[in-house]
Image 1 (spheres, rainbow, N blue to C red):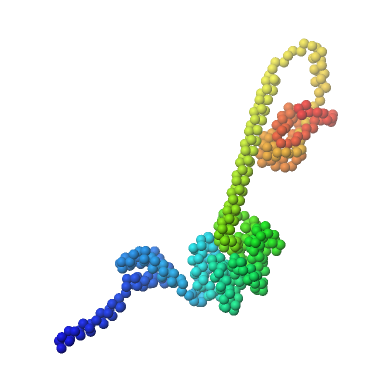
Image 2 (image 1 turned 180 degrees about the horizontal axis):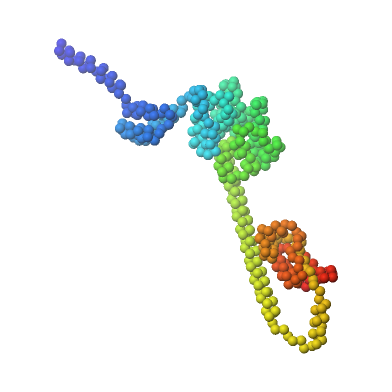
Length: 436
């Protein structure tokens, strides 16, 4: 019996040992359980991540493997169905998706879209942001997965439950897949839903015209519908991108960046080669305009420099003339040897009558250069002189000084204006000015 007891004893102990092994967790399973304790708020804080990595080290699990497990656990949490309670809908804000769409990062758009995809069915129609949420969701759906939104639209559920924005963006998906007959059916469905603005359909038809006939034809169609300004506010970003492609909105870098996702995935229906060709043309046109603008600025700069040089030369000539006149005045006068000549001089001096000179600008040929000359001649600011030249004819000078009249005439003559000099003596008779 003792021998039999010794044989039975190990057999009796064996089940006890196996039960202990089954209850013990493997290191990977233990770390998974540890990770799950940090996911109540749907994210990892930095301190929590450090604790997880420390636990992984204790279990001889690499840091990379631990990070993969953390990411998997977080994604599994996000993929769980969202209940239709009020709390689930309060966390869905249209700005979340709209902001990442404007940023244009496909990876971020896909990430936010997945979150919305799990919660979209829980949004109630009485939610004050229902239309915007539905519009952005199906717009992103059509952009990222045209076949997917088509499959949903053609499902049995869609035949029972109509959704305006699903129908709206499925039109784009059908057109991108070259299924025009189906797309036209979407337009009919949209027109039969009277709740929404009729110009929503015009926007879709304009996008179709853009793809089929180009920006000019699209703009003509758009204008024929009075500019389609009665569209739903949910389509603001789409219309902004469309108007930019038709030349109605300036394509600034910020607008291009904001509309990039919509342009590439919804406005234009093209393959990669066609898209690359279109963008190359746009870039070439941008560089051409940039070069033209640079040339214009350089030409304007040269004109200013030439005008300044001409003014400098004129001043130098004027200064030389003044010096010459001063030298003439300082020459000693010659004695008159003939009494007859002296008598003649006295007589002619007595007969001299004063002349009034009036100098008018009656026409402007080169306002830019003329403004420089006029500003110096009349001691005006350049802008004031430029403004005066807008209102011709006008009087520049009225004087009885022949010297002043001649000086003003010489300053302005040949500077891009047409001058008229009127000389009248004291008897009211018109005479010819000697310096003209």
